[in-house]
Image (cartoon, rainbow, N blue to C red; front, side):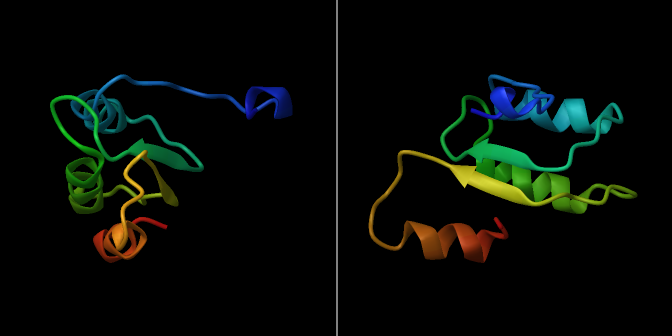
Length: 81
């Protein structure tokens, strides 16, 4: 859907790769994170990104199949936008 609107998209398959990619100096206007990624989940990734010195974090949106009661509130509490 985003490609149809001419967005440039970078897809990474696991959380640690996301953190490393950002540490390499790549910046984005928005980040979509799955909660349940291999090696490092989206919540852990967000916590690390928020602590990176000199990095201004863009809006981070949680994308997940975890739709149990209370999950929205949990993601907001963790700092997702």
